[in-house]
Amino acid sequence: MSDSKRGVLGESGAAAPHLRSITAAEAHLALPALRELRPHAPALATAETLAAHLQAAQPEHYRLAGAFESGREEAAAVAGYRVMTTLAFGRMLYLDDLSTLPSARGRGHALALLRWLESEARRLDCKALHLDSGVGPHRFDAHRLYLKAGLNITCHHFEKVLT
Image (cartoon, rainbow, N blue to C red):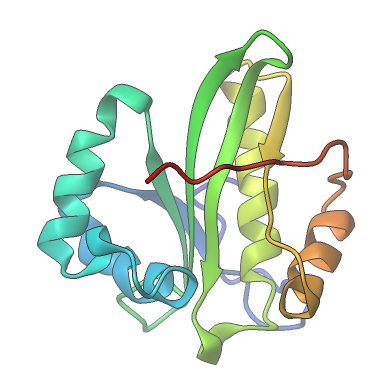
């Protein structure tokens, strides 16, 4: 979906959100939705700390995109992503964060962002869109969304915390 599509009805019957990139200078627009996903992240303490994080993550090409509803300044949903190249998967768009404000859930914002990200990945000559997702009953809705968007479960992710 292009940045210019507004007012079109989405799958939920509500007006489709306006989708666009969010710059570091606009970090305050993404902060409420990102805090829903990562409430304890130090980078999300203030709009200034998020802007600083976005600046520091520039070498890793971390970017934000948002779904905006008419009449609301802050993003109803936010995606944090980057483009990377790995030996195993080649050039890919990796989705780090996808979060919707509780008051905006069920209106198709996250699915619209996933479709926007797929278009962005194609535009950036990526071969795939990847994401990792936590497990457990609290993640089932997210997993259904990812499957609906055409993503497949292709591997397990392992972690060892280093202290």
